[in-house]
Image (cartoon, rainbow, N blue to C red):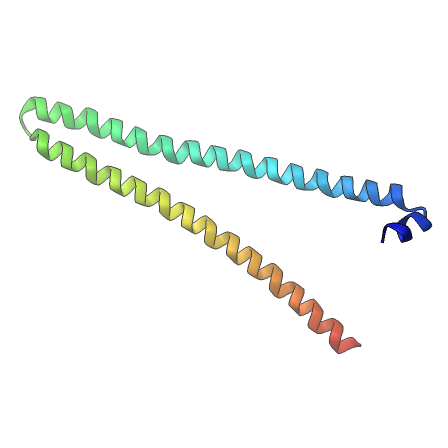
Length: 120
C-alpha cells in the first residue's frame, strides 16, 4: 500500500485526509468529554445537594423533637442508596446506547456487504 501511495505521488493527499479525520475525531471526543464532565458534575452535585438539604431539614426536625436521630440516619441511608442506584442506572443506560449505536453501525456495514454481493 505504501509503494502504491508513493508511486501515485499521493502521500501528501493521504496525510491531509488522515489529519482532517483526526481533527474531526479529536473535536468529537472533546465535545463528548465536556458533555460527560457537565453530566457527572450535575448528577453527583445534585445527589450531594439533596443529601445536604435533607440533613438540614432533618436536623431541624430532630432538634425540634418531631423526628428521632435514628429515623434521620435511616432516611439518609435510604436516600444515599437511591441516589447511587440512579447514578448506576444512568451509567448502564449510557452503555446500552453505546451498544445500540455499535449494533446499528455493524448492521449498516452488513447491509452494504449484502447489497454489494447482489450487484456482483
